[in-house]
Length: 492
Image (cartoon, rainbow, N blue to C red; front, side):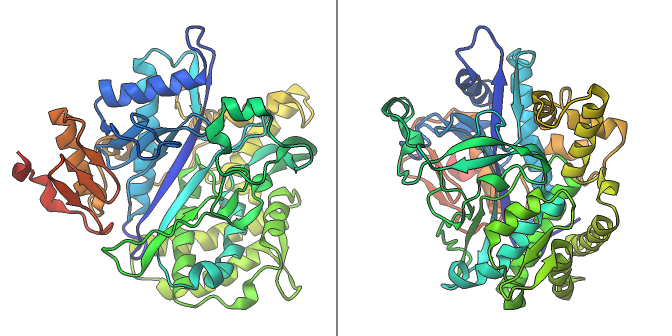
């Protein structure tokens, strides 16, 4: 496959960590050891020697990797986070994303921690009520009205794409604002968690829900918001301009989950690119807007009848499948422009047809279906009720990123799943960046820094690299691969 239109995109994944290591102080120590091993022992990146953000990304919390991605420990929650390189191909994106997981697993193995510690790309803590994200980023051709007006044409798609992009979850959560103020002890012990927080809530289990499509739907309380802690939204505006591409900015989607299924991952990103094309070209009619996107989000996730009915602004009821067909019909204008566009249009239609006929037939390509089948099989064999904690463990282990432990990998080996990439793509992406974005040029600069064990004067960011106090290399255009940087004699 090649190119989904003319767009750059990437994904950030926040990983959960569990450890039973008797020699570790807790998961916080494990994530630090893994991060340090990747930079200092595996030498796969240049660690930040200066703070990117004193509160959230202090010095030595992580850095950019030689494959174009970024890995760091986020101070909010002390979790490992991996941001892919900028990509223009779905295939490159998935390979680069999976490469990050393999790098973490390799570090665990080399540290001899894999027997006692695991990392997960799930998005919910069933017992603590926490949620952590898989955020998508898309370069969009923006104007002053996009986040105020055009975005309303995108919301109906975003809140309903979970019918094929959802990863599924056992149970549910209910947000409770009563008596949820953090104690003085909480604030003192975890000050960074409460910076700029104006609306704190608590979360309690919802025992009435057996299974739902999305792990994150119960936790989204805003359509758009700049503050994300206790204020999670569908979209978090970044207001960033890419100076190499006039009138473009980064659309940061908070509502998303980390797919284990490559097919669901590819369909999610491909269809989102197409709907953004439609929004930019003014081809989405206002008649598709929803009465309340946040209500629809939860209703679709929790609908165990799989009818997934939502209400439009004019009061009309429509099923999510038919709503997607309206987007699909309009997106056909892009057919023929590149291979990935054609793949997405074809598979989008095939998936909608299969969802309408028999959702359970999609267990080889959609996460929520595969997980539901796995949980149902275990529940019935053990005679368990839906609120049994053992089912939450099955849910969690589906997302273990270690192929030797993952229940998803067990599904893949037992019944088979549809692949988009192969293992060699993943192995290559552990060290090689995409070749058609600025990640390619930045990768060579990072390799240069790693090879020379450069002094503290360097600074690496997405759009520029300071090799020393005198030399700054600008990377302002995300669609330029800066191939001239493959020859770095000028920096000798």
